[in-house]
Length: 128
Image (cartoon, rainbow, N blue to C red; front, side, top):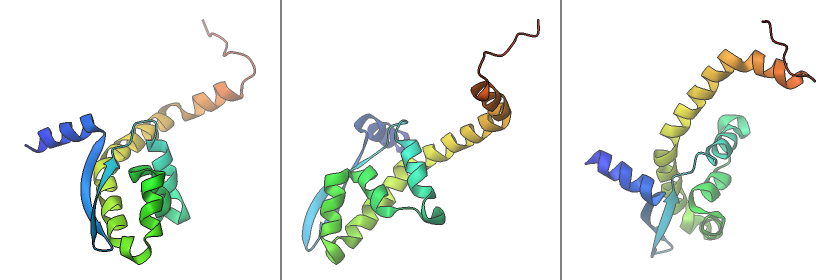
């Protein structure tokens, strides 16, 4: 059952959640970010000494317009913002963690080689 839900979420590109803002119920779609968006999320999380920029995370997860709408609601929107951030982390952090592990592994294996190639003005010479 859990796998079916994950597959539905991935196919839909996220999940809808219901939140309350100022006594009014709203449905908000929380995105499962694409692989191209995950580096943006990593950067946003790393800001402020690792505490992250939650307004930027909100915009990534819910879209700029919906995020701005929740922020504009002030105190009435705080619980809704928290719900969106929690769902966004649930949907995105497991894959981001795996992505970062792969990046770290590649960096350890190929970091110096890549730096040497990129800093070189001519292609590397064959040793044959």
